[in-house]
Amino acid sequence: TTLMNIIENAMPEIASHYEPVEKWTNVGGQFGSIYDRYVKDMSRWAFTAEIYVPTARVTALEEETESSSKNIHLVDRLVHVDCYCWAKMAYDAGHMKPIEWQMYVEWFNLFMKRTKTKPSGIILLDAPPEVNIERIKKRDRPEERDMSPDFIKLVHDYYQRFFIKKEQYPEDLQSVPILILDATKNYKDDPKIQKEYTEKIRAFINECMQTNVKISK
View 1 (tube, rainbow, N blue to C red):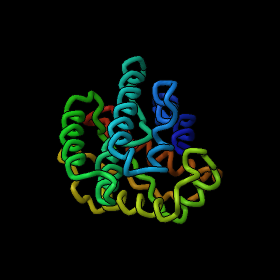
View 2: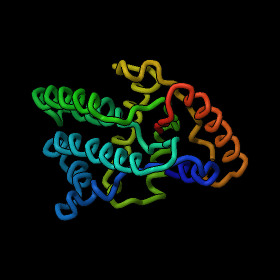
View 3: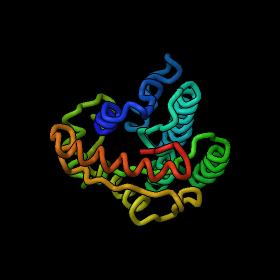
């Protein structure tokens, strides 16, 4: 989110799309947080959360892109990580039963075939889990306070396996280029790093526009 704000200010021609946190933290405007339920009782809420989160994410994204006059879209999170990182992690940890995982995979595959938004590029902010733990502590979001360091390290491991090692990497991403940025650098406060990353991202976007105009982060 921090980097997206920087890019948005530097490149006004880009439309930025953030995660619909308000939907996750108060489902339907009346049922409270699915995120909080998931963190506190994963075995009960993993399947439910992993269905709702990508649904809310893609619904919001499609509504925003359809109403936008801009051609380049920077998205806060790649929807594929909901399945191949978060849901897979829940299943491997025993929080989804085999039948739930099978149902989820079938649903997600159909869901992705029907979604209108497809990435033509991926920007990966890469940092060790220790850095992510400190940043989560500093931003102090209520929905993240129950995340243990071990949980954050596990999430990092699944992201590495997916984006770097490309384990079980889906066919629709095989030809999508990835720009990896060192997220340990202080791009939040250092103007030099902000300029460096902005220039790299601008060049990457121009490259990706050869095939499409949707950029996913």
